[in-house]
Image (tube, rainbow, N blue to C red):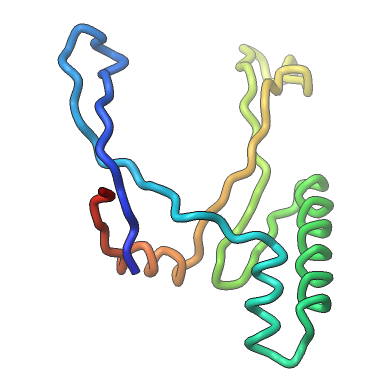
Length: 127
């Protein structure tokens, strides 16, 4: 497995007068859709790609529902998904309300196998 990267100049946001430095930045190599995943899975089992697509769509809907109810979603060897919030601080505990929450996001924590995959990647400079 090889990940391509390109080199980009970046300024130091803490010192805009400092000279730019150059950094490696990953380059995406296309994308894989839910339909494509369903087709790949179908070739690896006895289900049709339509059946696999239906299961993946159901997984998608159920993940959204579970996350919106504050549950952590564990996806086996892939990892866990959880809603996290950022809020304004208050001096007193009793002054904290839902209106203090400024934004929410999804946290993803990769499972062991996914972290191991990252450790086994190689990199190639894009031309």
